[in-house]
Image (cartoon, rainbow, N blue to C red; front, side):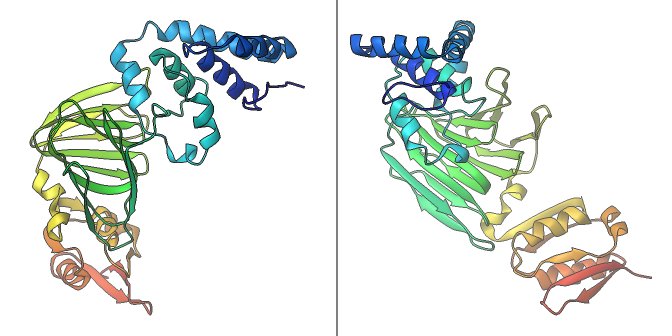
Length: 333
């Protein structure tokens, strides 16, 4: 059975990461070295895991410094929250590449932040139909759309937001010495001062820039795509697809801030899905043939009745009211 030394993790892979961090921390003591050697000799699996980590370390030394820095500055994902013990035993890793390997390789792609205690941390959650605006300590403003969950962490040299789900517009106070990051799954947005919108629907992420410029990167840390966006530009990323960039109507994308939703010749299925984000009583398509219908229009996000009336006036649709107050749409016969 594999054993781990006192004060190190029990799992062999985590123990290897712990010892690698300590060896490269610059604060490795003689007593620790003795315990480290005991651990390596205790089981062949321990030695094998440590050697594998060392090989990864050698490979990462060939990576550009910017890639390693980006890996370090990525916020801790939701799956890693609460593992305070792991963060405690990794705190001694001060070498940039060493921490990159521990965070990026040994945890199988789960990227940790720099293991630094944030100076400011806050979580904001909006419910269905709820919108909310929060001003941050530096004057930046985060305006959240419905059904949004995000965490803000401010560090000495960076500002970071982890967008778990939903949508928000960020008005970032300029500070070239303290960049602002938004992390949404595999997508990262880096700015120093600008206004931009980020929306995350599971693995689909969209970024739209209202003013200033942002750098968007997407993909695995070892093979990132990058794009610079300026005002009026948008980027979209989806799992297993390349990053797409285009110019578009950013004011339409961010119309939710004025209580509106804008449709520009879009499929009815997409329109109903978007309206249902805001309505307390959802609309359902009872006939799959309706998906092919398209329409344009501007509607209030809380005015489901006006939306249904417009559909009946413009499309061959019948609206059937449900007992719960919602509506089913079917094709006119």
